[in-house]
Image (cartoon, rainbow, N blue to C red):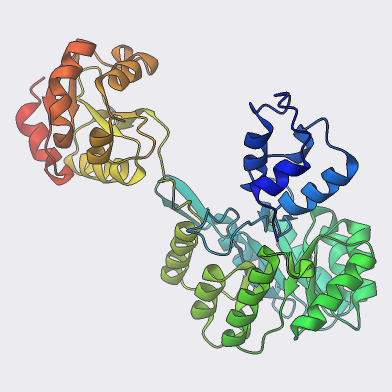
Length: 444
């Protein structure tokens, strides 16, 4: 079980030296208990306390990185069972499977689609993560050719799936230096797979059909010197996967079974309803998900679901404050003030684009709050508006000093005029009316 703040405090030197960056040892202990502090920042811990605190305060699920470069992704490193308790940090990687029985041209086509598929939503690019290469043939040369076909057209993270270490080595000879996930070590082949993982520095998936066997297999692989592991529960049904993955997560989070403190692998194609398996995996703790090709509509829905689940529920999605352009506005174009809550931004941007009136959007930092909430809480104020106009050099972008504010910010109009020296026009409360408003009110 993780230590509480007072338990941690008792292990600290209690010197209140401030060398860790915190004013007191108790503050430092509270940070460690919440997972926001680093044990090594205290220069006066003895070795025993350092070992105890390190084991208790590090994330109970190990962080594992798959791939190298820009498209690599990390999984694990999670702290909680449920996202409302804190947040989930590392979205599951969704990788599309190809078979070494396929012609090279088909493998390249699927890989290119995965490479280029992108959904831009609320300011974020949502991507597929990589390619799974299945050794369906059982032959090493065919497996090697399939990996080569993937490498010819994309630098994507890969999962190599083969049961025979000799066959696996054929694939690793092509892409092993790119740190693919090796899938999978089982009771009968773990020594060979662990040796390959050590030799190439790759993460290794371990697969067993019973939790106690999985725990034993983790111990065998770590005993071979491999500790970047991913767990494959080998579930025979989606219902069993749901139960086992939940139990694995619970035992990892509570540190009841340290061997379960690794990310979980799900092969969604093993189950009849692939979309259902994908949804289950995203919602219930799968960190690496292998899928067959899915249609675009389902893919966009799944990427959106993943983004929603792995967004901090206590922190709204935010835009970067600044000046944004709609169309190609000139110096006489209108300037519309709004907040950096992403949904507000994209809603207003959509209606402005529909109006076909080029304009500027001045986005101010209200910490992701909506207009109404920001006004009510004082986050949106005349001082913030003045500071933003100066910070983003709005006066250099336009030849006038007229600012259009949201209807819900009307109570601030007079204060903004006094503070900034800009004339204020109060816009509509409903963004859908902004086009009609500009057509009538903007006469420049």
